Amino acid sequence: MEEIIFPNQIRMHRRLHGMPMQELADHLGVSLSAVSKIEKGYRRLSQEQLIQVAEMLDCSLQDLYVNEQNSQQDVVQAWKREQERRSKINQNAGLKTLGAGLRHIRSDKGLTLMEVAESADMTLSVYHRIEMGQREVSEKEYRNIAKALSMTVDKLKTEIQKLNDAGQLEDIIEHNDTRYKVLNNARYSNMNYSASHETDECLIPLYGNSNVDGNIIIDKHSCLREVACPSNLQNKRGAYAVNLCTRRLGSLLSSRSIMFIDPNEIVSAGDIALYYISENETKLLSIREDENGQLYGLRWNPDERVNLTNSDLTKLHKVVTINL
Image (cartoon, rainbow, N blue to C red; front, side):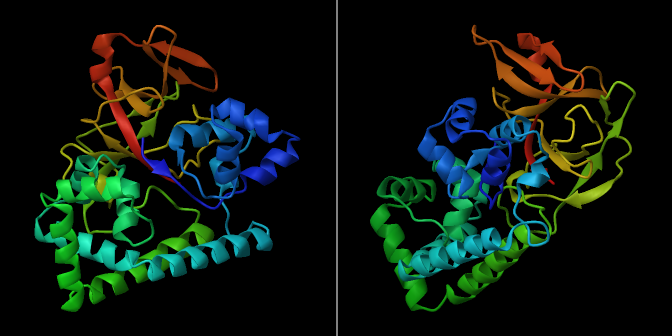
């Protein structure tokens, strides 16, 4: 499941519940230091962990996001100052030039973000932030990226320097700066954040109606409309979107949320997936693993465990991104 990072109000809700940081750390299975970084918006969370936090703090996912309308101004301003600080550090470190160079070379080779990310053993969001000039790169990561681009490290560095000297990266850097500001502002005003992605005019079908049992009915012969496809699903065969029309997740997610599905991705513990019980009827499951390593699904409102056999795994379609 794609990792996400965002300005949040987790600490405020934790304190309102009188919950020690250690209790939240134990619930997530991470260290105290990790929880501190999560609450400051410096460390990434998986979507499954995010749902676990909302469950434990008895609030919706939207309540955890910082936004200018509902959040304390000192929290909003602190996050903005941190973004400005990181931006200056990145600029001084030449990360914008590196990111623009990687994007230029990747595009020239006809490779997608996902293809390079997977070859470099990174998540899509991490590699996307590198191309945006918003993340430092370790030596190992640099080697992996160079290999993903079928280049040596020295060749990659030389090529980026040549592109920069020729002035071919200025437009990309300007585009990245503009895109970064748009994404940054959107996190406060709309609370409509998913894993970082480029916006392209690529559309995929949207399905989803709920029945009386809270199952989601998907009629592939009649889509509700088409929606913008996130970059991690572009060129993915069979990808589609689904309305979160069921309340079997309670109030954790807004009913306006849209789930983006990749039917070809392997589903594992910690993922959220659609389980097809018939050609058109699905159950939305949180995938877990028992003590024997066997996968099973969980549903809420009411609580229900769905046991899965090995043959059932082919009936699971992975939720790769959720737009709130």
